[in-house]
Structures are given as structure tokens and as C-alpha cells.
Image (cartoon, rainbow, N blue to C red; front, side, top):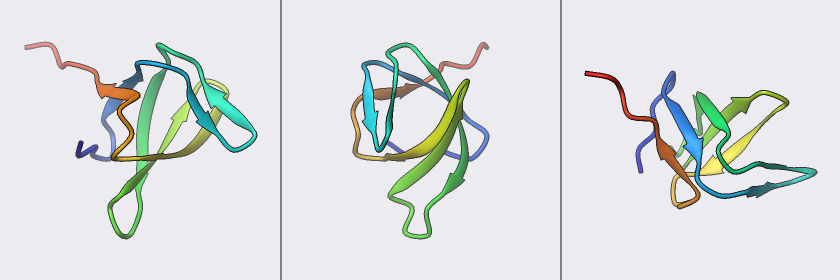
Amino acid sequence: MNPKIGELWRSTWRIPMPKTSVPEGTMLLVVERSKDSCESRVVWDGGTGWISDHCTLWEPVNEVG
């Protein structure tokens, strides 16, 4: 996967993170990329965290058109 800043993604399962987890079906906004481009910092209603690009528990939200 190759998330880009500003893209909207959706969790397809619960994503565990330190001190919290992202519930299944949560919309995630990519706000930052790591320097080595292997992780994305995302925000959602109620939190923020880093998700690995290799994580298979999230997917891009299809754009209309």
C-alpha cells in the first residue's frame, strides 16, 4: 500500500495501537508520512497514531468518479 497525505482510508478490522485501538470501519485521514515512508500517521474521531504500510487491516476509500 502507498498512502498519501490527505487521503481517506478505512479500517477493515480493529487495529491495535499503543494505549488504544482503531475500531473496525473507522475513517482514517493520512496526515503525515514517516521519513522512511513505511508508516503513515493517521487521525480519526478520538485519536491519532502510526500505521505501517504493510498492515492489511486498512484500505483506501474509493473516490467517486
